[in-house]
Image (tube, rainbow, N blue to C red; front, side):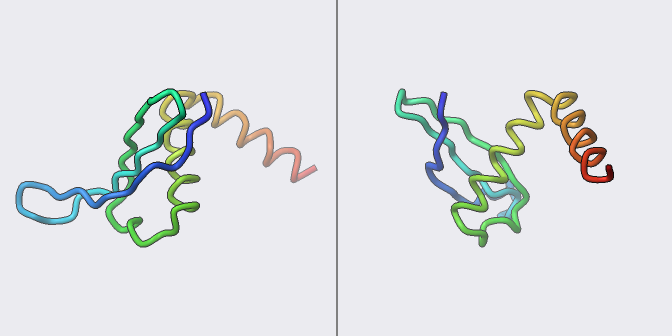
Length: 79
Protein backbone atom coordinates (compact mmCIF):
# COMPACT_ATOMS: atom_id res chain seq x y z
CA UNK A 1 0.00 0.00 0.00
CA UNK A 2 1.65 3.21 -1.14
CA UNK A 3 0.51 6.13 1.00
CA UNK A 4 0.58 9.73 -0.16
CA UNK A 5 0.00 13.06 1.53
CA UNK A 6 -3.70 13.96 1.53
CA UNK A 7 -4.57 16.93 3.70
CA UNK A 8 -3.69 18.72 6.91
CA UNK A 9 -5.92 20.44 9.43
CA UNK A 10 -5.73 21.96 12.88
CA UNK A 11 -7.63 20.09 15.60
CA UNK A 12 -9.11 21.91 18.62
CA UNK A 13 -10.12 20.69 22.06
CA UNK A 14 -13.42 21.52 23.80
CA UNK A 15 -12.07 24.84 25.09
CA UNK A 16 -11.13 25.96 21.58
CA UNK A 17 -7.39 25.54 22.13
CA UNK A 18 -5.30 23.97 19.35
CA UNK A 19 -4.72 20.36 20.34
CA UNK A 20 -3.14 18.65 17.32
CA UNK A 21 -2.21 18.83 13.67
CA UNK A 22 -4.10 16.15 11.75
CA UNK A 23 -2.37 14.84 8.64
CA UNK A 24 -4.39 12.56 6.41
CA UNK A 25 -2.51 9.98 4.38
CA UNK A 26 -4.34 8.44 1.42
CA UNK A 27 -3.78 5.89 -1.34
CA UNK A 28 -5.24 5.17 -4.75
CA UNK A 29 -7.49 2.40 -3.35
CA UNK A 30 -9.38 4.88 -1.18
CA UNK A 31 -7.65 4.25 2.15
CA UNK A 32 -7.61 7.19 4.55
CA UNK A 33 -5.18 7.15 7.49
CA UNK A 34 -5.43 10.07 9.92
CA UNK A 35 -2.28 10.81 11.94
CA UNK A 36 -2.24 13.26 14.84
CA UNK A 37 0.94 15.27 15.34
CA UNK A 38 1.71 18.02 17.86
CA UNK A 39 -0.31 21.21 17.28
CA UNK A 40 2.75 23.34 16.53
CA UNK A 41 3.60 21.27 13.42
CA UNK A 42 0.83 22.88 11.33
CA UNK A 43 3.24 25.43 9.85
CA UNK A 44 5.58 22.79 8.39
CA UNK A 45 5.62 22.07 4.67
CA UNK A 46 3.48 19.28 3.27
CA UNK A 47 6.63 17.24 2.61
CA UNK A 48 7.79 17.61 6.20
CA UNK A 49 4.34 16.71 7.53
CA UNK A 50 4.22 13.66 5.26
CA UNK A 51 7.59 12.44 6.56
CA UNK A 52 6.57 13.01 10.20
CA UNK A 53 3.26 11.23 9.66
CA UNK A 54 4.97 8.22 8.05
CA UNK A 55 7.46 8.06 10.91
CA UNK A 56 4.64 8.21 13.49
CA UNK A 57 2.76 5.44 11.64
CA UNK A 58 5.90 3.32 11.47
CA UNK A 59 6.70 3.83 15.16
CA UNK A 60 3.15 2.93 16.16
CA UNK A 61 2.98 -0.25 14.10
CA UNK A 62 6.58 -1.48 14.39
CA UNK A 63 7.99 0.02 17.61
CA UNK A 64 10.60 -2.64 18.33
CA UNK A 65 11.70 -2.97 14.72
CA UNK A 66 12.10 0.79 14.32
CA UNK A 67 14.14 1.01 17.51
CA UNK A 68 16.38 -1.88 16.44
CA UNK A 69 16.98 -0.25 13.06
CA UNK A 70 17.96 3.01 14.74
CA UNK A 71 20.45 1.29 17.03
CA UNK A 72 21.84 -0.66 14.09
CA UNK A 73 22.31 2.55 12.10
CA UNK A 74 24.04 4.30 15.01
CA UNK A 75 26.32 1.30 15.52
CA UNK A 76 27.26 1.30 11.84
CA UNK A 77 28.00 5.04 11.93
CA UNK A 78 30.20 4.63 14.99
CA UNK A 79 32.22 1.91 13.30
